[in-house]
Structure formats: C-alpha cells, structure tokens
Amino acid sequence: MSKRRVAYYYDSDVGAYTYGYGHLMKPQRMRITHELVSAYGMLDKMHILRAKRASAETMTRFHTDEYIEFLSKVTPDNVEELMSQRSRFLVLGDDNPAFEGIFEFCSISAGGSIAAAERIASGATDIAINWAGGLHHAKKREASGFCYINDIVLGIIELLRSVPRVLYIDIDCHHGDGVEEAFYTTDRVMTCSFHKYGEEGKGKGYAVNVPLKDGVTDESFRSIFEPVHLAVFQPSVIAGCLNLTMQGHANCLQYVRSRNIPLILLGGGGYTVKNVVRAWTYETALFEWFGPRYRLEVLPNNMEDMNVKDGSLDEVR
Image (tube, rainbow, N blue to C red; front, side):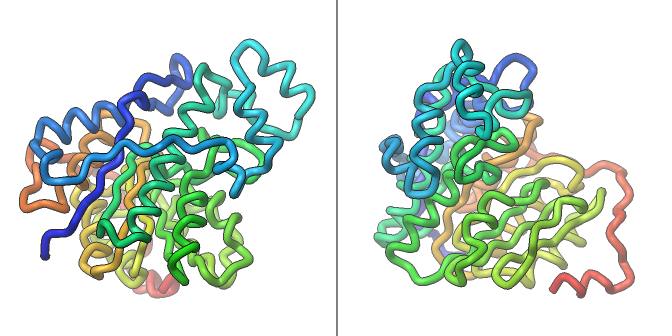
C-alpha cells in the first residue's frame, strides 16, 4: 500500500478528566495511547494537530440549544437541581454522571472530530485520527451510554458541507444508535453497525445492522465485514464479547484503507484500558511501514464462536 498523509489529533488535557471512581469509561486511555504512539516513534511520521475546541454554538448544529446550555452549566454540585428542571436530560446516573469539566471534555472530543472532517474535506490529508472521538450513543437532547456529545454526527455534518455521501462503519461491540438515529431520514449517509446480537436498530434503507453473537472470530468477522466497504468514518475499538484479536480488528481497517477513500478513524468504546491502548496504537501504526505486532498482541481466548458456520452469514450481505 502507498503511504498516506495522516493527521493525528490530540489534546493533552483530555486524559485529565474522570467520570468518577470505578466508572468503566476512562479518558486517561487517550493519554496513554498518545504516550505509546510516541514511544514507538510514530509522531514524526504524522501531522500532529491540536484541534480548536468545539464551541456551544458549534455543538448545536446537531444538539438542541437547551441541552447544550444544560451541559455547559451542570456540575456534580448542581446536577440534582438542574435535573429537576429538565428531567428528560439523562445525565444523572451510573452511565452518565455529571463530572467536573464535562463540557470541556465534550468540546475536546467534538472539536477533534470536526477538525478531522474539515481537514479531510479540504483535501489536506488522506486519513485523520481522533481517538478522543467516537461517542456514538449521544442523542440530540440527551446523554446515553457514557456519551454526552455525538462528535461523529457533528463530524459527518461538517463533511456533508463538501461531499455528497458518507458511509459510516461502526465496529464497536454496541450498536451505534445515536448516529443511525441522526441520519435515519437521509440518503446521503449510510450507517452500518456491527454489534453484539440483541442491540438491533431499525435497519431500514440506509441503516445497516449486523448483530453478532458471542465469540465471533477474526475469520467470521472478516467474512461479514468485507462485503461492506467504502468507509469514510470507522470507529475502531476492541470491546465486549467480540472475540477478535488485535489483528482481526485491524484487518477491517486495512480493508477500508485499501479502498483508497478518505478515512476518519475515531475511538469510542473499549473499557479494558491496556487492550484499548494497544489496539489504538497498533492501528495507528498500520498507516506506516512498520507495525509493533508482538509487544502489542492481544491474543484470542478459547471462547466458542456462536455465529453459525453453515453459510447463513450470507444473509447479512
């Protein structure tokens, strides 16, 4: 494969935020990933950029004005008062706590994805990476599944200013419902989500859902994934019960890259920090002439592949 121009977005403040003790989402994984990427000597092979943080006004290109105002004001101390005034905003709770700096954290995530979209649309880069993005559950007026601002939707909206069509591919363990819902009524965005069985979306027209059972292996996943291609966005994280090795997950990225179409690569889920960091670092390395394969290996386990092997996988094509 020919070498591509890669833009890598990173804000050093992103790892300083915390959802709270014991919460599965750990923003420090972005900082650790950056340190590992640096240790492997990749930074001098990419354009390293710090994106302008998204303003409240920019976030309202998708989210409602009232919701963004709520996020800009909420703190752990006043959350109960604000929630009593705006009960439909799902921020208080185990999944989406009100933590210190919540709005700034969201502005970093969204700012990186919007800047990546701008750079891709301008033709200044072939591939843009924002590991702080990929928060695919956030809805227009509420938080969901650890996600407060849907940076992916904001990035796609920015792309649609310049390009006619965007294909969004989501290979997180969980259904990318927030993105699918946002673009469900348009034919300019096709959303395709590969996720664990039982989290199906509406799946109509330009929304493609591929629910999978526990234990899917590299080969099974490849046989399903490769018929779906031409991606511009591809959140890419190892998570849950999808039994993919790092190479199996990276195969998806390599396949999309081989199509020679501009690509934005985002983070998202993944809650075992050491594995997420290894995966993101490994996949960053795929855009260069080397790949730190052995030290970053995530080996498969002996989980049985519950996905059928009798040819019925063709049904999802």
